[in-house]
Amino acid sequence: MSIKLGNLTDWVPLSGSIILGASDERSRRVRLYLNCLEPTPLFMAQDGAPARFLATMPAGLELVEFVASGEVEIAADSLDRVVYYQSTETEKMWFDGDGSSFTTIHERQPRNEALEWVMFQQEQNQKRVEQVLRAEMQTQLDRMRTEYENTSSGVHGGAAAQHQKPTPAKGAAAPQDGGGVQPNGGSAVQPAPAGAPGDEQAGAA
Picture 1 (cartoon, rainbow, N blue to C red):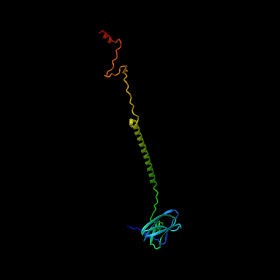
Picture 2 (picture 1 turned 180 degrees about the vertical axis):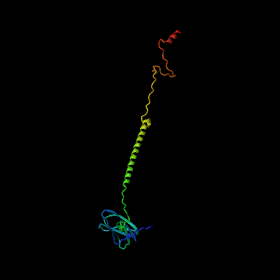
Picture 3 (picture 1 turned 120 degrees about the horizontal axis):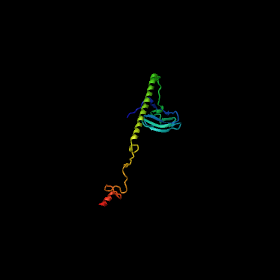
């Protein structure tokens, strides 16, 4: 177990009572570090009110913390108590210097006008190059999109190809009644017209 006391000059004996003041009436968090030789009851009074019991601090290094507004007076139950205290209310937040400063502020020196002009021209050229590159990239994307739309069809884009019905040959005759395809694959036989040579030959025989 280690006990860290810090700077010993910051520890003040609690003789009588201590008054922790405040710059305004707003509530604040008060931290009071106590180093007691023996268990010590503490009492507090605020804004002229009668003293009230605060807490009993055990022997050794302890911390008591509370929220209060305005001035707070804290005292032990007896003047014979051996108590040292340290509070954030009395901490010194700054120290008076001896007047010596080792900090040097360097002011920015103006650049050469010729260098400024060269840097400006370089920046303008860079902007022009970026604009040309963006235009070329946009042109390439437009061309690729057009080629894709013209060559794609069906589910991959564009309109699906329409299937056309086959057209009959010019010299083919339209089928007549009974001239359909027979089940055996042949065509129906057409009756011969009256007075055909075939009939005369059949009668002569």
